[in-house]
Length: 347
Image (cartoon, rainbow, N blue to C red; front, side, top):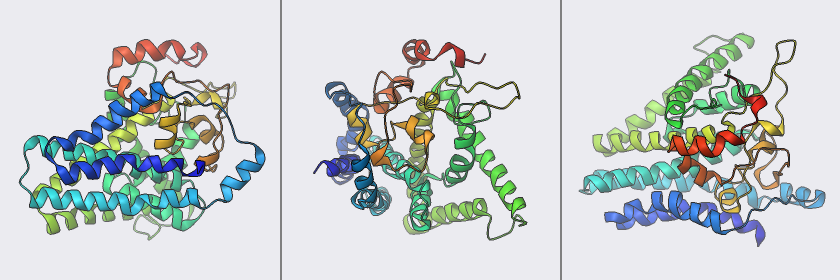
């Protein structure tokens, strides 16, 4: 039964469906649940730093239940998106209802869409990677697959990495720099991959071109099937989804920088170059994303067997709570700056 604890990850889409169905002020239930209720629960439940033993790890890796808990997010996410598009196009809504629905669907896109896509994007099977890319589509962040796998995991905790927040950089500044830099970085990586394969820009191997076509096609289908209001809804909820991702990126590596060796190269990525959190509620809801240090140590490792490393810098709160704190830069800096190792601060 313990293996089914990750069903709690479906609590956010469940609350979102509740808001979509009842509307009125219920449309704000998802933001309140995600960024008020969950942070409160994180403060109540204890921190769990325990790791699995070898036999248990082997058993959990082979257990397909953990994989299906990821796959189920595809119909859930797209079902909620379609329901939301239908609702805003067919139902007269107050402005506060429309905005609430944007945030509700956007949070689902970020948590059950992009976050799950991140996990599946690291898998070796083509069908799992396909599902991951599909989950990125409604947030217009399909380029994340290329930049994250071929860029971020190589450059994490260096100035060259768009997804590593600098010391004293606010989350609002990071949203802009990371979003723009990651997109252009993905194109540079794609062009390099094409060149290495002896292919041209118009090759079928140009995934970035396909991503652009697919995302534009998605918007075209939305406007043709549901109208311009639904198009606005799709764009706005997609933005909320990838802004949530960038907020997570912000807290994952904030202020942590790899040192350069005498040769000018950066030291290898270690467990100390990512912020770790063992707060159980955030771990479950985010499919263990909060054990980010171990993920960077071995990116192919499945979420259900990620470890806690004692040498990793520990966040005082869980990821959901930390995301809320990051929205108040003076408070974030006061809490986190003293935790950043002085040797890693690059002026």
